[in-house]
Each structure stands twice: as C-alpha cells, then as structure tokens.
Length: 256
Length: 358
Image (cartoon, rainbow over all chains, first blue to last red; front, side):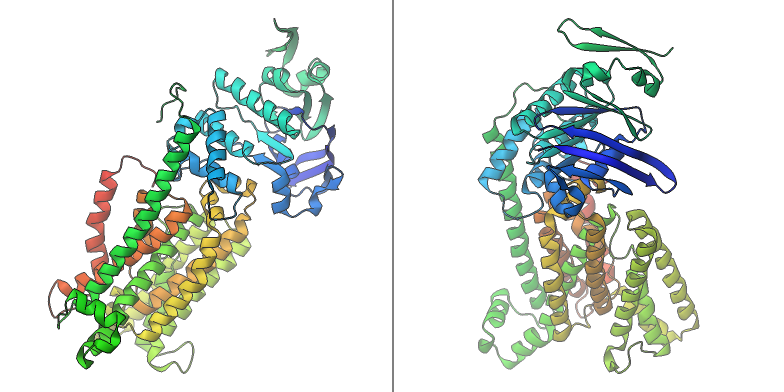
C-alpha cells in the first residue's frame, strides 16, 4: 500500500495554490512531515488528497487506485483528515464528539463496545479527565488533543493531520506526535503531519516533504532534506543544523 | 475551564459509566417530557366553559363509546382538534427551530428569521384585503392556502439565492432578513389600504390562534411531521457533526451543502404549514430548542426529540392558559407564548453556569 500524488494543480479563482505538486510513494507505517512556510499550500494539498477540494489537474493514488474514482464518502473512510481549526461553541461533550467519529455518521445505537473504544481513545489521548466537559469550555490546546483523538479513533489507511500541535505546550507537542507516530506504525497506515516546527519534524518524521509556493521542492529523510539550501531559501532564513545529544537533528534558524 | 492536570485520570470504566448515566438521563427526560405532554393535552381538553374532570376526559378519549353525546361533541369535535393542533404545531416549530439553528450555526435563528412568517402574513393579507386567491377554488381555506403559498415562495426564493451565492449560513440569513423586510413592507402597504374590518381580521390572524383547528388540518400536520421527522432523525450524526464546524463535518464525510439544502427544505415545509394554519406564533421555534439544548446538549439523538417535545409543551401550555386566564375569553396564543415562555426561559438561563448559547 502506497500513497502518491502526481502533478496536482489547484487554484482559488486566479490564485494558484498548488502547481504540479507531486510526491514519491509514501510507505505504510511511516510518518511523513509536510513542511513549508505559511501559505505554501499545505492545507490545500491535504484537502486535495482527502477529496474535499477537487484539483484542476493531477491524480492521487492509494494502492494503485485513483482516489477520484471513489465517492467522497468512501474516500473519506480511507483517508482520515483532521482540519486545523475547529471552532465549536456547541453543547456537545468531548465524549459526544469522539463518539460521533467512532459511529462514522451511521447507526443510532451506541453499543458497549463503542463506548469502551471511545473511553480508551480518550484515555490514551490524555483527555480522559475531560470526557464530560463541553467542547466550548476547552482551551485551544485541549480541543486540539480532542481533535487528534477524534481522528485516531477512526480506522483509515491514510491519516492527514493539519498542524496538530500548533496550540500545544512542549510536553503535549511531544506526547501528541508520539501518539500519532505510534498509531501510524501499529496500524501500518500512511501518516502525514503538517508541521511548522522543523525540530519536531526532524525528531518525529521518517520522511519529509518540503512545500514552497505550491510546489514540492524536496523530499526524503530529514537528514537528506534539512541540510539542503532550499529550506533556507523557502523559509527566507539562514539555517544551521547540529546534532543533539541523542543523535537527533536540531535546526537553528537565524533571520540573517 | 476544566482541569488540565492529568493526575487522577479516570479509568475507562469511569468514563463509560459517566456517559451511560448521561444517556439514561437523556432517555428519561424525553420520557418525562412525553408524559408531561400527555398531561397537558388532557388538561387542555378539560379546560373550557363546560368543565370535565381529568379521568372522564381520559375515558372519553380512549373509550369513545362510553361518552354521552354532549361529552363526545365537546371532547372530540370541539376541544381535541385544538389540543392536538397545539401539540403538532408546537412540535413542528420546535423541530424547525432546532434544525434552523443547527444548519445556520446561529442560536438566534428560528423559522421566522428567514422571513417565512412575514411571507405567510403577507399571503394572508392578500386574501383578507383583496380576496385574491393564489390557487383558485379553495373556498373557505383561502387565507390558509395563500399564507402557505407565500411561505413556500419565500423559501423557494431563498433556495434560488443559495444556488447563486453558495450555501453559507451568512448568505442564507442575510437573504432571509431581506425577505423579512420586503414582505413586512408589502404587508404594511396592504394594511394601509385596508378597511377597519379587514385590518381587525388581519391583526387577529397575525396574533395567532388555535381556534381555526380542524381534524383535517391536524391530519395534514401529522403527515408533514411523519414525512420530515424521520429524515431529520436519520441525519442525526451528520447534523451533530455540523455543530463542530463545516470543515470538521466535511472531513467526517458529511456533504454539507446537500445537508443544508435538504434540511432547509424540510424546515421550510414544517414552518410554512404551521404558520399558515395558526398564524405567526413567535418564540416557540426559538425557545423550544434552547430549552432542549440547555437540558440535554446538542447530540441530535436527544436534542431533536426534546426540541419537538419542548415546543409542543409550550404551545399546549399556552393553549390552556389562553382559555384559563379569563373564563369565557380565548386569547390569541401568539400573545401568550411569549408571556408564559419568557419567565421560564429566563430562569433557565440564569440557573445555568455554562454559556454555550453564544
């Protein structure tokens, strides 16, 4: 099972967002980080893969199947997409919203197995103590963790997380990314995480895709991609890479 | 805000039993509301110039053979249609309001926000002041049919606009408000030229009255409910998901545009029928869903039935009050809904810590 994108074009009216975006096959069990500056088209690429946006050209293949041949509903069963924002002032509890993802929009009856699954998902996401809290009462970071739990409870072949750590503190950034990485590895799924923090990308990702102005500029392992010059030019910063105390790559960025 | 510390993390079984407890509470509240509704229906039938006692009413309703001709006339012909009409219309407005608030993501939305009731009032005014029927040959139902046709025209126009400008809540609300003012202006135009008698008739129609209830009208309401409600119930999860935001719902596989349009069609039908039969009864469609939301939250599996029941209870209670305040006089229900509903609603708001109706 692999996921590939070939020559994806997408434009909002006149404004080109993606231009011939392609990436080499992504392998199951691996976590890929999609990196790139603001407005480089990361969310749009995710939406094109999930089928929420229709690219004007290009194809996305999963295990050799052109995903555009599937219905939106079927496609979203195979590709689980977690959008970046959820603004919710709804009178729904954390348990309710995760249950909604567990039931996948069908069947009124909630079985004991469903409840057990939701309880476990909440606990392993570290939000078990919030289970009966209304989502309108959550902080930004808490709702992000709930969102991740909501995505991970679904069984899909591909998981797309749009900036799952943007509102989290250091401790929770690490724990959420470890959770995602573990889930992807255990399920043999294909995981892509859009990240702003290159150090987190270096630490957790097996594979990096660098997106700049709607094009894929580089792809490969962190050790291959991070030292390249185009990282610096894409972000418009100077970059030094050092090795941390645990053989991890650390990215230092300087504005000039 | 809830506690962030992970110390004292509850076990899975605690989490599950909390949820189960809440589910049971939801079910029992729905059952309780249904029982309360049954009681108000019986009280509604009891109340009036010739007083019957509670058990006698229950007997006459469930065993019509045991009634004297006079009792049968009072219960079956005079009071039952009114009592059941109150329940049906209340439920229709409650459901319409609940789903309107859901698809428009706006807690202030109700069937009247989109201009449906002013369109209906205008239709009624055309019938009353000019005697013009939009559909010929309806005879005595002239006012009702006109009101219905105009309410449908208003929602048709709304549909057309959403086709042109995209199905966003903002566009829908703005077009709805434009329609509201257009029909209000047209209505004022007709009122200006109306005779005193017509004006009195028109205002009486607008105040809303259950006195026009008949068995066939009750049957039509029930048919509409039977058609629309199962569809809404079958879309429960999708509608619940919509409350997490359009993006999130779409990511879960909800076709948001299609859902909004079909639910809008259902809501339009419900409110057009309700308004054309009983006149503009404000408040029920707004407050019924809010009461349900405050009590059980917005999981549609509880929210929708309880919104319907809350709407039905409000209107059934109103029907009782409209007869009981001054014996011998039946006040228009439109006036009373607000008067008895608001104190209850305010007390609910004040007693709530959470502020999720914002």
